[in-house]
Amino acid sequence: MPRGFAPAKRFFFDRPAVRRLIDRPTARFLVRYGGFVRTVARRSIRKRKAVSRPGTPPTDRTGKLKRGIFFSFDAKRRSVVIGPTRSAGTEHRGRLPRTLEEGGRLPGPDGRSRRFAPRPFMGPAQEKGLDRRRQFWRQSIAA
Image 1 (cartoon, rainbow, N blue to C red):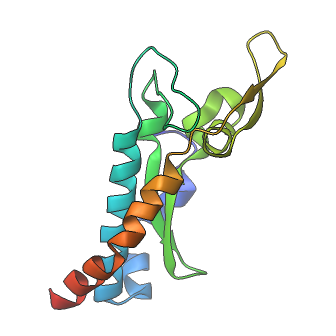
Image 2 (image 1 turned 60 degrees about the horizontal axis):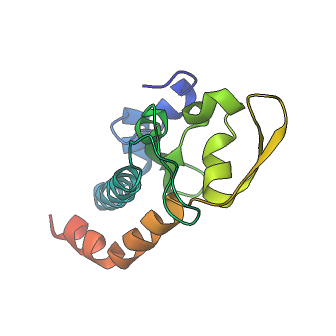
């Protein structure tokens, strides 16, 4: 597990504090939805040497981005938060995942700023998850 992720571990769904906050069907639904979106996002990221084209999911040469995608409970909103941790992009102070998703500028190895076109991976994964929400909810209350 990536470093710097300890605070979010408190809100994983298997923690007793989270289990006390939400009822069983809601927890089951949020776990299924979060797990599905995380899996779709991870599978969309390819590990290869070539650079991905703008508009397609990013390439992950080291595997840090792919392994750094998690989901946890958001107690304030009583929902699930899904996405890469800040430590998934440590070489750019945690800004890499957001820059890949939305596009923007990051410093290059020579210190000059480089512009990146968006390479979304979480947005398309969430859209697929939204299509399956009803199915996940039906399964969570039927079990």
